[in-house]
Length: 139
Image 1 (cartoon, rainbow, N blue to C red):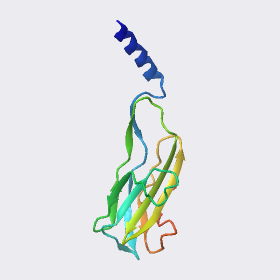
Image 2 (image 1 turned 90 degrees about the horizontal axis):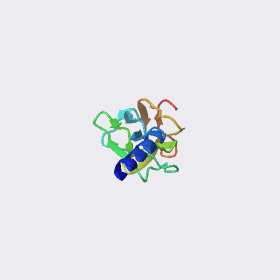
Image 3 (image 1 turned 120 degrees about the vertical axis):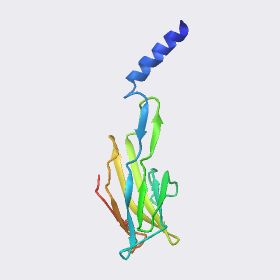
């Protein structure tokens, strides 16, 4: 009987806790094309960091490699949310590493709500590592 009471109490708590258990999406999907002087860049590493102030993507949460046409896709990053509480501030830094150089491609942040989809990114590496090299929709 005690177990039943404990389960009922836990069930009531879970149902009231900010949406209950489920999968929380931490990032939108990212896709796009990487070019240099207009030509596709094959084999570039595309890194996604969810850490604030990690604009060189030293701690990536996901990564992809460009294909022969310079295309890449990174699936949304998610985690299991047991109690319904989520961090409502999100940061996304997308970096591109090619030929020993790392470029900040795209950066965005969001306060609350689901992560916005930036749409396909167009990344041109001809500009240099000090500037953002990808264009997409801004959240």
